[in-house]
Length: 192
Image (cartoon, rainbow, N blue to C red):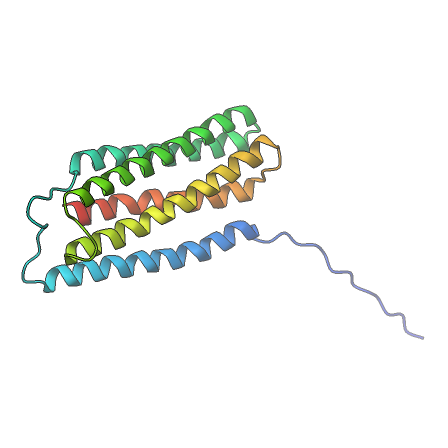
């Protein structure tokens, strides 16, 4: 009579938490998306005989440059919040996460105000190829920032309720880092 042994599967931890892996995949698609937008912008700009802003319109380069620093600070604050959360300093993490959220909100508010002003001066997505590309590229980034603000708000809410998990915060840090790091590229490309 033979004895059969039953091998019980061992529980393994994944190499990457699901939230982090999912975010890596999502970021890869977003990098491709922004690469396509940037490529289209460069090709169209190179092929156009005339490439200039409509008369009387000037992009707010200085204001947007300062606003870029606001977004970068927001990204730094989120990284600091993650550091504090990993060290079980919940109160400090909440404070840094709130700062990140607020600075991200300031960035969107300033960009929205700039858009309204540019519209009043005549820049539109339907009148001029530059306007169409400007609003497409900058608008796409704005939608990503708005989505990030929703995510930051959720992270803050979960942190206050003591239900936030570190992998979820890490995934949010990855997404927000993408939003923060792609902006200086778009700013330089479109505003100069």
